[in-house]
Length: 376
Ligand SMILES: *Cc1c(COP(=O)(O)O)cnc(C)c1O
View 1 (cartoon, rainbow, N blue to C red):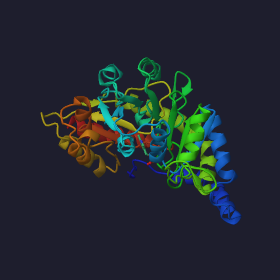
View 2 (view 1 turned 60 degrees about the horizontal axis):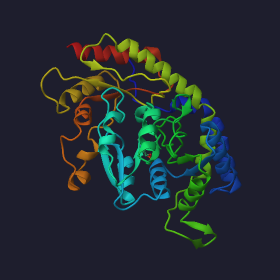
View 3 (view 1 turned 90 degrees about the horizontal axis):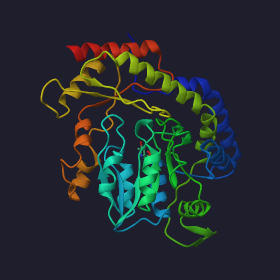
View 4 (view 1 turned 135 degrees about the vertical axis):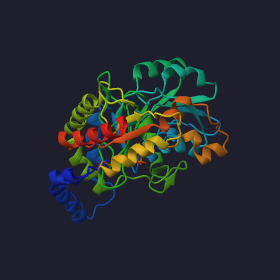
């Protein structure tokens, strides 16, 4: 029995390693490491893929969120509604611009914002909502946009885990005012280092974003406001151009793998499968394991993970500590018990191996190991 990692890139490298190597060497030989046609080419190709008028590349998904908030004029005293069951950057960037994250609870099966609880969190200080398409699961954007429009709120989509996902036929990241993407290596479209992008259909917003990512510069050495330096490297842009051509096929593989997990896991007790959805791109396949005892402190989940590890099955926990329970937000006065679903699932989630090249035999090994521990 061979071991199965939670994630791996080696087979992707076998497929396109030579092509990437040549492209990277060509950049090295060109001496053009910042900007140039590699970067503008990727921006054009990604905008076309997304069906948006504009794509503004940047250094990371975190920068994409920060720049989007800045470009929309969100700052001191403003409130931004989002989920506490996400990667830290989603809330961190809200705080970094001086605004206040307001956390709304999630749905227990999709792990996305519970839209039925959204309106109760809106105040006169609310400026924006950041829906996170967590694990690749598209948020119900029809419902979310209706709420946002009724209250005149901006919508910044956190698409870091959902490149290629769709809602009602439209790519996520093309529905709100801005879409923010991460190309961190483990995302559905991953670079060979840090990289990110922002998409929008608003040309004025795009111009503002381009200025802010370049120190607030309008003409050479003339600065109109305080920006940051957030560039996509030419090398990363070439890697992304090559990988973008494979993205739909890789996402289709992820969908087939998720469907197979869904069937294989159906008979297992004390386990809740993630809710499937049209347009879901499965950056993670995340189950919940239910403790047979009263304990709900995550210790049972750790026992299950340890067993899986012994059976050669790599797993991950996204996310063990909800954002309102992080030390920094605790110290800012965020209280426990306010987001019961988020707090509950944080003790139960396990992300199973998921990458486009995972085989049926490997999935069967994962499920067999789970079956032994869950019925034991
Ligand atoms: C990865 C991720 C980010 C941040 O992206 P980086 O490129 O790592 O800065 C933001 N939000 C979510 C939901 C993410 O998963």
